[in-house]
Image 1 (cartoon, protein in one colour):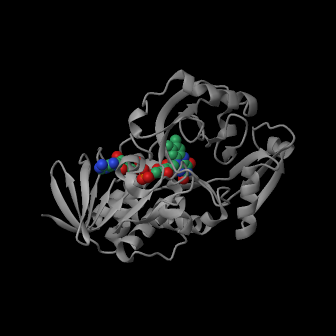
Image 2 (cartoon, helix red, strand yellow):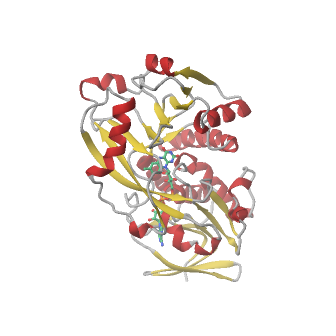
Image 3 (tube, protein in one colour):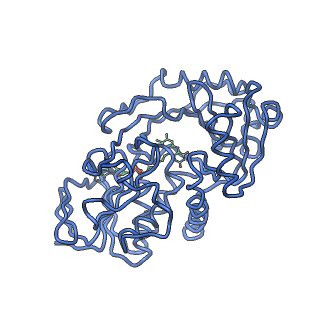
Length: 376
Ligand SMILES: Cc1cc2nc3c(=O)[nH]c(=O)nc-3n(C[C@H](O)[C@H](O)[C@H](O)COP(=O)(O)OP(=O)(O)OC[C@H]3O[C@@H](n4cnc5c(N)ncnc54)[C@H](O)[C@@H]3O)c2cc1C
């Protein structure tokens, strides 16, 4: 039976990073992906992902974010590819709301440079319009990642270091055998000392024994033509943004190509038990809430939609990640439930997973991401 130091189950955003990190440490790695490598049926496609530092979700993410920036830049050096573009991030919402207060708390705790703006200040600096009573917190240590390029860079780098990464080879079953694992696909059974499960939305099924109630949420990314106003949405003039408004939150990106400005709603759709119920075609109805947001808050962006793409979130009950050793199998490391905000962390998650596979421990603060926090 072919034998490896580690098998990575699922080679998307996190799995590609884990393959790279394990290969970098000299491990014999097999990466198994059910679809063609770089596919658009999971959670890591749609051209761009926001990266930011003053993290409203929780200040504990900040050390991981600092590391993520370093590791993305390192991957750029290694591959010679451009993966991360810096631009400002505007967080905007009710002045005493969860979003702006969360950004302020992370900035305070980690001494991050942020700039406070009122609604009039936002209107002076950007094409946005918000009523008085809204506040903005702008940070410069932010930008966006080219998501497919990032996945590809991790895969190619892992392969160049000797990793065996196979697309179109779904894992049908795995089982703990002695201190290791046997992993079965249609092409055979492989043995490894360690298994890393990075199965995205399919973790709902593959990690059903984890004790975490994972759900899947369909999300649609929309692009809008900026027409004659393109200059106002250039990345030197327009930030990535998160706007906490009724019907939202919404987020978006500067215009970086002919498709225009990308805007989407964060959450706001039914929670599904597995990826099976996700409709992969976007419909005109999907654009309605986003159009209403633009009409209310970005009146300069009146052009028609140019493109839409469906993607999936995998949610935990508290919207924080799961990164841990499997509670029942110490030879299995898991990373799932990234709850719609995980991509920016991929290289650090890869590092943590390689640590867990190597030694069962990591120097990175992952207490908050333990699978056992839900009490199962
Ligand atoms: C629309 C949208 C916008 C987002 N915006 C942001 C953002 O701005 N910033 C940010 O940081 N994050 C963002 N996220 C979240 C981020 O993209 C995800 O958290 C991240 O991509 C999840 O990566 P993953 O590796 O867990 O999942 P995936 O990339 O989906 O990888 C899982 C892989 O496992 C494979 N797999 C599953 N089962 C099997 C099996 N049995 N055998 C073999 N392979 C299998 C799947 O095919 C898939 O390729 C966004 C997500 C979406 C959907």
